[in-house]
Length: 445
Image 1 (cartoon, rainbow, N blue to C red):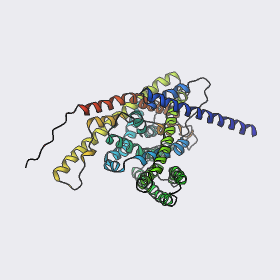
Image 2: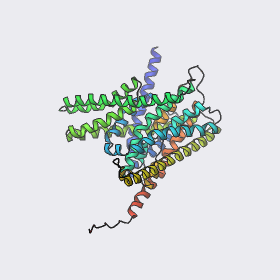
Image 3: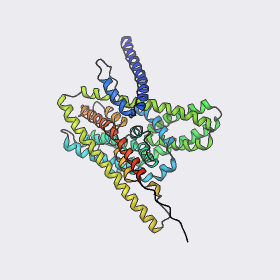
Image 4: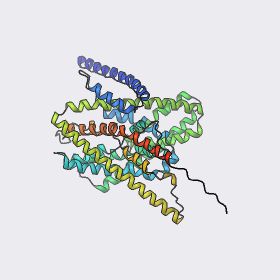
């Protein structure tokens, strides 16, 4: 027993040392990427792949529970805390369409393609793969386009989508996994469960934000205590929400938005600066480590398959990537068209519910948002976290296939789309600069 405990401790220590080395490497690579004018996520993923193929390199596999408990709450909280709430609210139509409707449409679209394309991919397995690949990682897109001058509208839509789409994807994943285990899928039951999860998550986030806000007012003169409480609050909120079977994602987002509005009016500037510095450091380290872990996953997935399978499944991953991109493009431009029509009708009828012109997307902005549908750590965590066996004891079917295809799609979207995205953004900026300024009309009446 002591020998087993000693070996486990040695292995944990080895992993701990490797993580520290990777963090140090990530800091250096991020600085070099900035100097070379290359997006840091792309560099970190490529280096992660290279490190993973080093002979004798210990396997560092993504632990889905750690991702959801350690990485997700702080990243969600920081993004929701920093988002401009009035803009978020004004663009709620487009954000909700991308975060909810598009996620379910993508799940169905990928499921149809996977079922008819991949041998042995039953409908339950196909829907499971679709739900895994449905959520986008807009954080990757924003990191890749950092410093390129995205419009505030584009930023708001991408950030708002990334805050909410994980919740709908996790619900789709839950029901797909249940269907695979033999539970029949009932649409009205799934719809009610989805609404209850969202409402429950919102309620948990709101209640805990009020509690945290009350405590913060009492201890606001103790800067260290305030910063410590704020740091712990997203983790506690996520755990509480998940414990009572509601959406931890929505709970943390609600908490972040609520505390942001409280901090803007109640806390001194010095405390805001300190808090921002701490969260910037945390998100920098977590985001960087996430991209390296994504790269490290490819060598692990490759070792589980034969050469012929690798080529074939890579092709499947490419087709699924194209499918997701096409569905996203149709959704973005379709919703843009509906918004444009509603804007015209509103002004013609002089309706009280005026749609502001500021929420209307240009063609270039729509193209950027369409191309920013990158998959990331959530998709990988869901795939890797699949159980080894079904409820009836049978081995989980095509698990290695699902993991590898997910890895391929994540890499294609982040590296492939990521290398092209900056050129699309620069084209938008150039087009805006080339638009001639219209002379102002003078009212001579």
